[in-house]
Image (cartoon, rainbow, N blue to C red; front, side, top):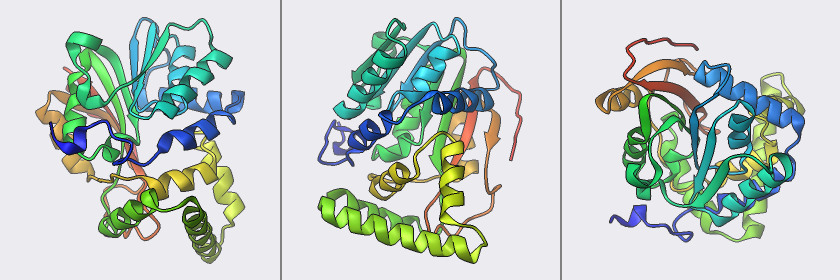
Length: 284
């Protein structure tokens, strides 16, 4: 087994502590936004009778949204015990009788024999942090049941990805004090950039919370610490999944297909693939 595939808190940023903090902020407005996100990306109004897998379950927010949409079973997995704890807490407070379970397990250790196939496999902003993105994408694709959907969001490749990989590696291993200073520096620069564009930091914070219900400050910590870090172009992503038997149904590419500088980071492109379907729809 490759070292990058080992379940190791030393080689991965501690996302779980961040998700535990965010889980305490989950309210009905954030749940409603998560429900809307799943409907938009999947193209489905309801998940009735469908098994739902959340790879990298984080706070459990989107697993909860899948339950609200009628999924017959919800399974969440994460390599970080704090993320699994956060998801369990979210369901204990919001859906204590749901048919849901959460496990500490790597995507590389998930097999069809143990978990079966899922009609909906969901992984938002996770598989590019595994240390072996292509391998993780293929494992996720293998878990999609016949006629099922794969909903995935991945960092867009930019000109600055190499720089950010180095920054993230440092941030994920430095002291909490240095992390706080780095966050302040990043937010100050980001705020300056917003002003040059005629916007305020408060506008961006409100926008970030509207899009996916994420808290801005949790998101900054998540971005700076997201190591391991890989990225991918839309064309490469579509080609890989076609090779594995999944066809693109829709995509949401905030910047079209153009290459971005990536000076302040890389946004996620969102994709909906389906096994055994030939329809291709694109949204931008």
